Length: 580
Image (cartoon, helix red, strand yellow):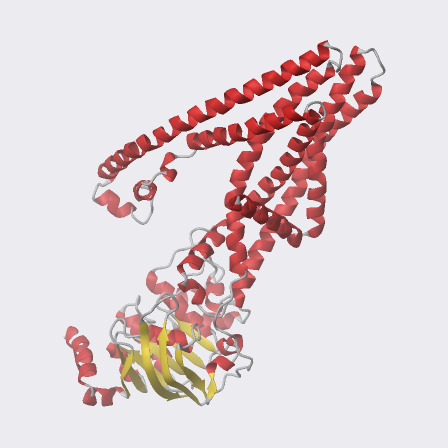
């Protein structure tokens, strides 16, 4: 019962979304649907009365016109309705996508992406945003239409025999449900319903995926994979066949009951006609009603089932729109200028984790300094950058800009003056110009200058070229070229504070040296914090922050750390010796 209540609650909420997307078109669709649904009821009723009038040799013109009108409405209204449904679908798709994007815009932190449930929901929402609205319209409207038609047919039948109408309802509902279940099992791949589904899907995709194509062919894995697939497939089929046999038996039982009730009802109506209690047209009515009820009930169950998945999607959609992050936005506007940035007793634990990553960090650096952040894997280097970018707030302690807590500034105004190049940089499937400018408007000369500074002069000739072969006339870049694009994007933004998180991981030695010279050797007055595993770059920094297991092991100029910190000296020497 709870599931039925939730279903209708979600259905009602879905109709509300229709009206939010476009009030006028939704009103038209809702108005047309009952008219379209009642046209068959009117046709059956008019047909019955027409036959009665003819058999009694009475005037029949009125009922003939009524039947003709019902036939015209049955043909015209679906065409008109489909046109308005298409318009509603376009509006709804745009409304849903925009609402998702605007909600994402409101989220300042990365907290949502650390919640595995919400993250899964977000992927489902993103994947379904293009086609779920179509299902909502098609099946949502169809259900409304079918409920009205079925109700009208039962009303026609109930006028003559209420108990027969109730008895038919009692046998048609379970018969339709069981029949649909069998049909679903027949047409869906039983793989998707079995406990072996995930492994079977993986094995089939293994031979079709682009990522694995080279090695699958090189090591000739086809026969072995197909053999494994067949073994699992046959094992799964045995389990499913048992279920199908049981469902087939149930379907035959309910089908027999439906036939018995229908035949009994027909016999009763024949008796009424023979006794001249009813006109012969009632037999035409009964045959038509039974046909409409069987077909309508089947469609209703099928459409309800198909809509259910989309209603669950709507539930995820509403859950996402109602999500409130724990991080609160400040009210002060950051102007871009500061003298000092300070961390006071900063500790941090990622959301939905119990492991503290950073422990009681205390440090201070001045505007304009170039700070290298080094340490072994897992020492907290990238996490620190995320805190300074305010993707998260510290679990303990605070970050200060000139004695003002960072949390008091508006995220948007603060990030306006930040730039960054990440190790896991984005590869936007957009033009060269859009990738560098991040879709910001600006002079073409500035884009070309940034490309030249990172050594990508070959891309200057066609700035509108798409960087993906998914689009016409697109091109693919190497990993190193993509990282240079990310660095050009970082240069393009005029920022007072720049973060470089492993900015040269995909570059060759010559390009790496060029990048460090471009960012660190030039005296731009920009404050730069760069995370690196490559100790060869630290001599370009004013100071080096050496992290170990989430704590500060050292914070001083490179030369001083070499003299005073044995662990740092060993780490530096290991890399130095590797190049001998």
